Amino acid sequence: MSNKYVTYKESLEEIENIIQKIESGEPDIDELSALVKRAATLIKECKKKLRRTEEDLSQTLGELED
Image: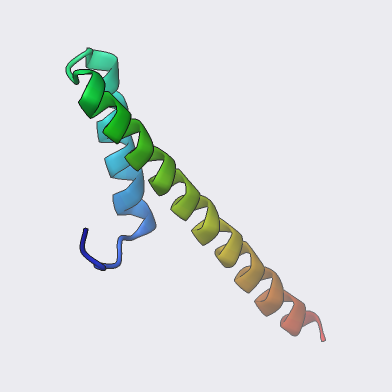
């Protein structure tokens, strides 16, 4: 896997594609496992990005109040 930075939007699009594949019944058991693991990784990364953004915004807005 490359170390390329993946944006939040790209992660969401990949998660949506994974969900569509799973819902279609397309993947076999081996691929299903890999897809679910990939989706879990992407979800964790999205949560981290959201937390960091929230912290940055709170800090910036807090600085405006001073």
